[in-house]
Amino acid sequence: MTRQEIEQEIKNIFSREFEIENPGMDDNLREKYEFDSIDAIELLLEIEKMLGFELTQEEKKQAMDIRTINQICDYIERIIQTRKTAG
Image 1 (tube, rainbow, N blue to C red):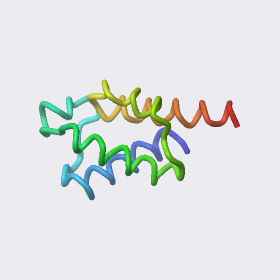
Image 2: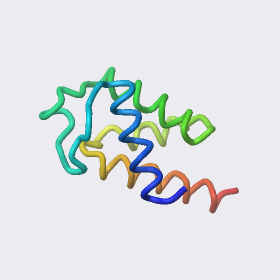
Image 3: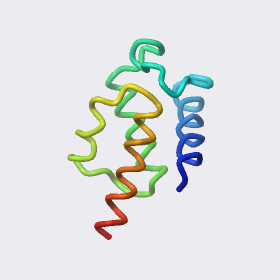
Image 4: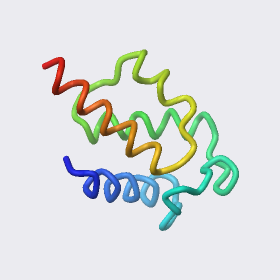
């Protein structure tokens, strides 16, 4: 999956699941869109669907400090890379 494909899919998830259209890549999701911990759990479930596998507890913990779409994309790229290396 390319960075561009990841960004597009994340934006699609935000539109579909959270009714947030065209969020800025560096907008603080909590401040600008009132994105809360329940939303974050929902997002992780959507990321699992997108990737086609369950995230480990450690991978989920790594998501706790994410605040922007760019950080979400970085996070997904890291997970994909880690799984490729491990697999």
